[in-house]
Length: 370
Image (tube, rainbow, N blue to C red; front, side):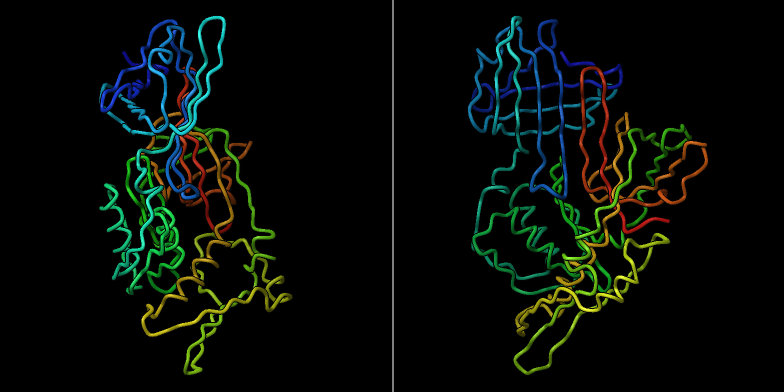
């Protein structure tokens, strides 16, 4: 029997109690789902799970955990599966109480091959093609934009997860591209040029109910540019690509296609700094022609996407990693807050159940304000 959450959805929790054998955690008076968090993020190698349960019947005494045992989480809406994810336990804690035991569990997406397996293989192709091949090897789906960076890529004893991050840092999809990647709860490797994302059609409004919009609460917008742009090299940094024939190239500018009126940099600071962080790279004919331009672009753009929006939506959404959405923010007077409205790109999504309430905490970013 599933846990009912605010008559909106149902949650079924199943635990591996023997090899390939699962037992459902019972939804009865003495057993309670206190908290569930399932999080996917471009900042993590893999999605994570946090669970807190009240066990008043000795379920976890009869079926104790071992490291790596599986947990299956199924969320249903109108008896249809909305999300089903398998995790593996890496940490758990039990506190005895007068009525039983409180159990907390930390787990990771069931993908140990992707997270822990290293290889020294070489791959001939673009970063997009290599990431698709890794997805296939690890049993994932893939949603990858095409890139222009074909060469021989060596994994060099990195894990698959580390190698995907390495490839992402070097990906090049054309002038002005900025590549980001992440693994979703649906076990899809997403690899996107976030400077050229198509409209998802998802619309969000703050506080005020509007037809066709998801309603956001606990809404905040912040900026973390500061030292990231200053000491980190966002202002006036350059890369010198060196070759054996002295035909060197210097990368020092970006052609930014602004989506917002005010990109989060100060042109006066640029003029005053003039020359900041300097890096050097060596090019040989076996490398992709655009390799180091891709590295330079990705680093510089990462320092521009520093305006962050955090909010909670109290209903299931189609949002996932690197999905753009259109936000209409309202101020205290009920007028549209033009400065903070606009298009944001999801970098973290956390599905939260606490007691009898469901919500999705969405973290998203963009380059500036209006």
